[in-house]
Image 1 (tube, rainbow, N blue to C red):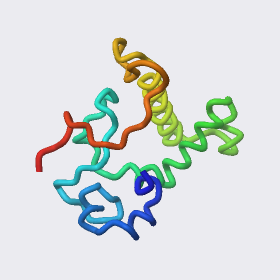
Image 2: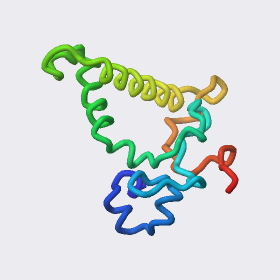
Image 3: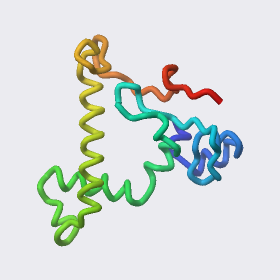
Length: 137
């Protein structure tokens, strides 16, 4: 998990070939990369995931969307952006919000109703590659 949230630590402790296999955004792309992918119920095609989630989640555009979403959810987006919000940021917020809602649904809805929850509390995040989506090398 620490590798997914700290690119610097990952680059210090993980060899280049492994980082390329993980889809590291700081390394040249390899066709056989298998970056972490969301749970199969997320409706995201694993073939569309080409870059490590740790890299993409630390991009300035993503951080800006996360911060703006907090203001948007309270109805104060224009105050955050010091004026009207541009369309690109609005779309980024919508994508982020839809993904957050999808995760919330998956964690709180019983598996019998299309969610991930078997019994008891919410699902703990898993960073293992789902077997059903493991690509052949």
